[in-house]
Amino acid sequence: MQMTPDDTLVFTLAGWPVNATLVNTWIVMALLVAISWFVTRNLKPDVPPNRLRSLLELIVKTIQGQIEEISMKSARHVLYFAGTLFLFIALSNLLTVIPGFRAPTSSLSTTVALALSVLVAVPLFGIATNGVGSYLKTFIQPSVVMLPFNIIGEFSRGISLAVRLYGNVMSGGVIVAILLSIAPFFFPVLMDMLGLLTGLIQAYIFAILATVYISSATNQEDPS
Image 1 (cartoon, helix red, strand yellow):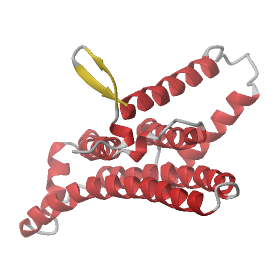
Image 2: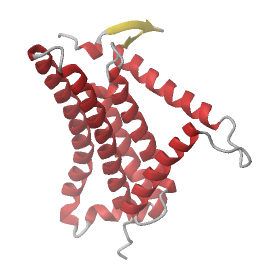
Image 3: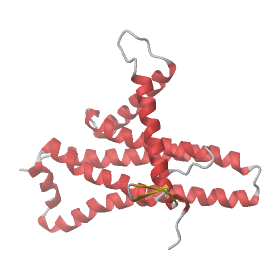
């Protein structure tokens, strides 16, 4: 079996193989933690915000506003989850401008992991908001006959999220490779700019879809 570039073995840790995808994922996670710590280290009411803090506050407020517009209620319970998904995917895609860095989202294992996190979060949010009984009743609506179809539909959400994100990132890489073979001096700058834009759009769409799925689970009313 031939290994793809993102599956290339980098080193072994306690007998476990560590590939490039894991290393790049750790880099993104470390950068997110470092930026968060740097911005919030002097977070006090009497300290005026600097430019970086103001920028990040604007991003958080924008994400919160989008979530509230979708869920039609307070977004605090979804903000941390959907916002983290957006920031992780966006930063992963933006870092591709660095030579040698390959976005973790270009690996199917990463996109599947992100989709599984959404798949697990949806019932957890639904149960936490409406209770176990009310959430399980949604699987037999409008009748018991729909039970298998509702279960299949629940799992198909995660599959569609993983395939959509992976397909978008991989298709972008293929297009770049084709254009570089045609005009290696002009297209790299253009495709880097386009890649940054599409990376942000992919992160936005993934986070919005996760919010829609969670909102549909938390806004269910008890039919009894």
